Image (cartoon, rainbow over the protein chains, first blue to last red):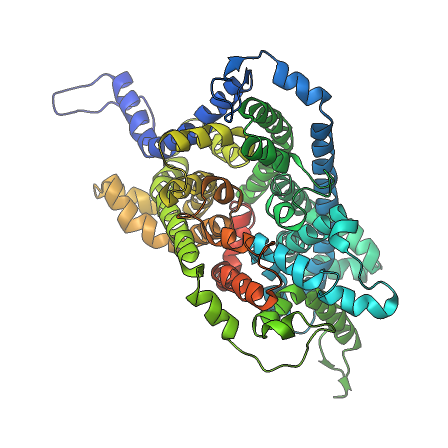
Length: 311
Length: 281
């Protein structure tokens, strides 16, 4: 709407500026409830988190609330367990995203080629993503990997690999495996959508021109699905950075601190130690780190929206 | 390549297609196997479920489902349903007008507002966890299913706004102009044009909300203890202390996963769109 339109109201002519202001507010009005809600539940608490992070405060010690300056942050830099948690988070995220993108691309390519029962394959393939993560972790830990009664040690027994306590001997690898199992279908779905947006005639033309399958994939398919790969990897990493369920169920952060990532450490500090000040400082750092990843993710998201808008 | 009838009417065996099909089905089998195994275990008796070597052939029984359903499982399930349905309705009530303001008659700086909404979705829970916990504690709202529902609304609202907006953008603008000429109010416009036309969008949004809130664990485990505990919390009881109840565990896991699995399978087409906030159709 043009803001300079004059309107004759009930009482006479209103000034152009006030009409424009009213018009702008009328437009904004439907946005207000959602906006206010989000600000109330995320922004104000975040401001409080920053505030608390400068205090020493343990809920288990009444009257312990006192200003601590940057102590909580100083401890972040020196504390061994925080460094371990950050490292574990990075390792877990990179491994899960890297592996599940490669697997997702492979499975999506399979499902995009002419095979029998594509629809059913896709349906079954997305199941791991839909299964409740706590349920999935339990099934893996107890019924599949348990050294005595699990299926895998029983099947691998004849190969000399029986009775291996996977969860305790390879805790991080187990968590990665279960998360890859869960996130590969997610990547597959996004990448498959990219592959299906490809015009088969272009590939056919390339083949006629003498390109082999590998060249055609590298030169034609890959550039086309690249934004989808990026989107999957970035969105996925925003979720995987927050992994909590499967760590809680599979390893409870252990043995020792071997699988304690930042969210799990936060859980331990805030809800087992009730150390509010320290937990808040971890929160602030987590926000800064996530913001960096999220900025890239959002840029990709917007660029895809723009590409679509041009069509 | 599919089976072709080549010149001369001879049938050519689709070797390539068969080979790739076998590879594909093997991969799918590996990924689907844990789910299949969960179902199989849930239909066994306890001794069969934890036998070594594993029991492959057995007479299926629904005994463990009966045990779970007649035990303490239902309250957890009902809590999950309240939190999910309640928060989904709230997401739609708050999100639809917001999406309207960002799509149909866009406000100034629409991009910034969209950016703001989605940035809150990816704010780690670490950002607001402690103050929300303290607030809930002071208001006696810990272990309250409605408080948990409000948190789930926060998680899903940004997704809801983005997703609903992407559906609204597909409505031809002429429809709104016609309605405006006829003097339709905002509420009439929402009811007569928006809701009927984006019914699939509303369904997709509800589905995504359901997936994220039904499976949510972190807030559930920290903000509830007994009366308001949700389905994932029920499963925590199987970690230790209850011994080896594999069949019961599998039956509970099957029931806990059922709503999202079914919803996801029914609405497969909407799933990608929902997961990418409308970016990929």
